[in-house]
Figure 1 (cartoon, rainbow, N blue to C red):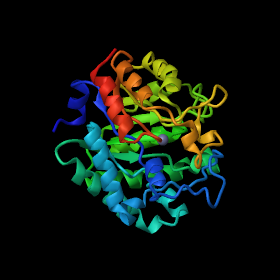
Figure 2: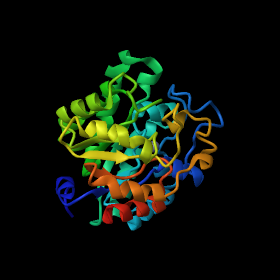
Figure 3: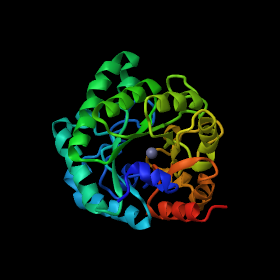
Figure 4: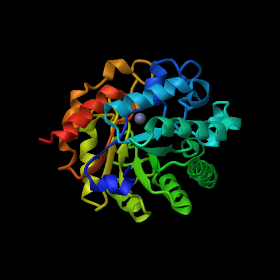
Length: 314
Ligand SMILES: [Zn+2]
């Protein structure tokens, strides 16, 4: 099996799709919408990865589907797996167990057919408590990255960070344990700036300067809506771009599906067709995208469509 650097050299790397929304649809993940108003942007909602210990077969099956669809990288379901986020969902004491189980399951399915990436996201402390909480974020992110390193991931995908300051901390933590990291921000409510007011170009430059092996964006936008921000990043840096868009339509006023009323219980009404991911795959190489996958709303059908586009560029 090639390592991640070799995969980048051999062509556009095909990632996998979104886990939490798909497993929520299948009944194994809690969106939190039954207890609180989700989608306010203030860190509400559950969407935590305890499925790795509670229903491991469901997670294993979704990994298999992505692998079968052409994914060259399988992401361990460790998204929202910091002790901070897990504690608010009632799973703080299981932090080690959940992270280790998720990596073990991903490695079993990947075998020698795919690499396994550890997924690390924001703590949600910055949304809830502001920028003074960044030191606490550092402790939590550092703990999770060390767990993922011990569990044996091949590299990290740092994703769905809203604040460049928190992403910068995550990149420093990744460097401190020697794990290569793909770094993707999520832009909301529009693609113009991230939550601490930095443009996509500024984000790309900073992430690359902190050692990210690829920089880009994930979640929130469908491929067409995300493309202009990726182009802005492309013009700002020489490292490969990584793009894992969502499969949900957004509006001209709000470029963020998690801020639309359809999130999380009526997402079927804004679902993008898989053909848009084929079109996106066709563009990837010319747009300088070295890592292409999907995020929320992308099941295996979308990854198969994306892979077809990558393999048959326009
Ligand atoms: Zn997503």
